[in-house]
Image 1 (cartoon, rainbow, N blue to C red):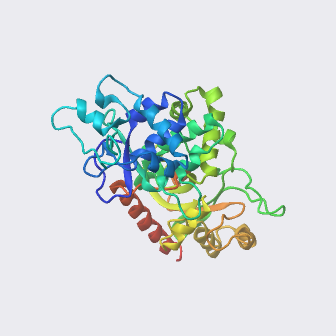
Image 2 (tube, rainbow, N blue to C red; image 1 turned 180 degrees about the horizontal axis):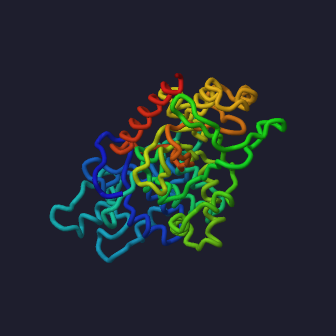
Image 3 (cartoon, rainbow, N blue to C red; image 1 turned 90 degrees about the vertical axis):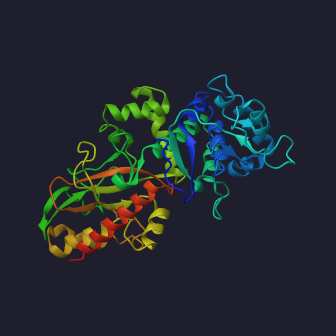
Length: 400
């Protein structure tokens, strides 16, 4: 992302890509997470200044003040150049002692020795925008999302998971993809051929084109859940380049490390698979547009979206019910009840297969990666508004 200011509403904050890269070179996820936590307390009128200190860092990461002070000391030693503005963390008093005219910053609370404020200057002009929820300790969780990342035991997985999360936010485009750009990150492929995961031993359904009704074409589709080897078979050079930026390793060794990082984020509920229906393949057609979301593979997020009443959580059930009403495939009449027999309303995953409806044969289902929390930037707001509008329109169309 560029350095263009996205919004003045709040609920998100910016972090410097260049600083993150400088910190990441030390292969210490703890330092990256400490940087992200402290940047959350940046001042609105000067985003290079943070009021965060050991108390804030300890609260966000769930660590002792002693540990927080050590991490801050390490950040003070990370520099990408000799000047005072080329260091990850500088105490306000030390900054003011060497800064140029007009660069002085408020010291902050006078009872904190040299002052409580710190300066966290950027490196370069590229920023990533993060939601405040990453630093929030909810009533149902003992630690904030950043604190949960901090507690991943395998340090390599922790490091890669942290970098992957940041990369997904960097490539986030809700309006055009409903998540991250599948051509610049990775995606989860859906199948249009073969047999579906059986609903039961009696009903293994055939995937593929089902027929046409009321101006729409219907397909039976599914995806191979947790089959990372199958997913990887569909990746191109650009996808492997993205994986290498996360793991620092080539395809042969980097693939396993990457999927470990993805699973760690998925297990924590910080990223999930959003099945989006496009009017064309977004990987090959730059003008492809979202038709509607098919399903959100995160129960908590799906429940939240469904409660809003705009069908942003997916229209899988509505599509299947329309396919049954129009009689495009007799198999559906036999199994539609069983497909949703284990579903709790609309907040559970259909069992076995999905049906897609679209006005043309060019339509494509793509498994988009989406962070659990979306920053409330102008781009984020526009993305939600677009998805909400399209979902509501298709919900009405599928009732006919």
